[in-house]
Length: 138
Image 1 (cartoon, rainbow, N blue to C red):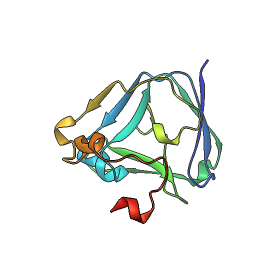
Image 2 (image 1 turned 135 degrees about the vertical axis):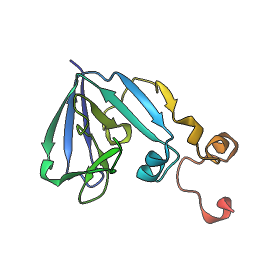
Image 3 (image 1 turned 90 degrees about the vertical axis):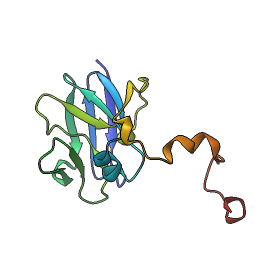
Image 4 (image 1 turned 180 degrees about the horizontal axis):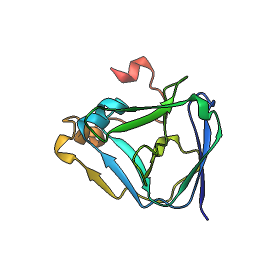
């Protein structure tokens, strides 16, 4: 059985996911853009994997956008996105909160009609291995 480990940014919450992921979607909907503060969310989905909180379960909270199925679970201390089981029968795991590597490539971009206008230009900008100094960023 595959086991994935994960945690939040401040380390108060840690968890494991026992089982495999069914899909890996990069969602460009407006809710996910607001939710992540980025161009898209990167979430892994499973109908069979089990979530086990190893520490900090009492530090996890959830928000569901009224009138939608859009949900975000997160650490109350640092705000990091964490796995959600708010949709019955479905585990949703933000890919970035995993500490172990995943071999699965994204399955698809979804809600691509809402893609941020600046999202497609990322291949045309300089790339740095770390934070650039002021002289090179202007």
